[in-house]
Image (cartoon, rainbow, N blue to C red; front, side, top):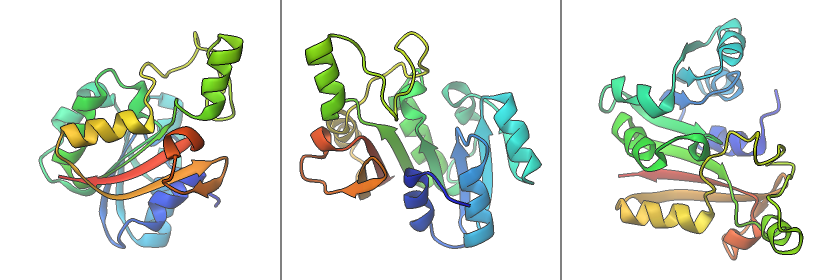
Amino acid sequence: MTLRPDLAIIAANVATGSRILDVGCGDGALMAALRDERGCDARGLEIDPANVAAAVARGLSVIQGDADTDLADYPDGGFDYAILSQTLQTTMRPDWVLDQLLRIGARAFVSFPNFAHWRVRASLLWGGRMPVTRLLPVAWYATPNIHHVTIDDFRALVAERGLTVEGQWFLAGDKRRSALAANFAAEHAVFLLRK
């Protein structure tokens, strides 16, 4: 199975045999890869009932729930990794969700689309409209994205929270980019964090 590029980065950097909570797990593609290829005990939380059904059909342990409210129900330190992939910008309180991820897991992977990418900037500057791109494929009024986060915004939140960045990866299209000018050149970011 071929994973989305950000998920492939996460899968390649999770320790074998780890306990995983994938928050906003979608159809469970990452969880299945971690279970089958890394021997991980992967659990999931997903808001969309169709995705929950698809993940359960893969034999995965996924419950329907909302990151904005249900993370509070998980015990401290219950997982080695908490994963939040392309979900941070859809939450009501991204700062609270980040705190919960690192309360629940020893480490957290967080990936998100970078709203400071040059194409987004150009669309706003020259067209005066919110962009529609491959990673942001729907119009502003139909998007689940309620917080338009940039790489530099996320770095500032991480610093404000006193968190340690153990790894960071940047993507333009499906290719990796260097950290140099990532806020301008990367469409997508993946961070590995710990307290």
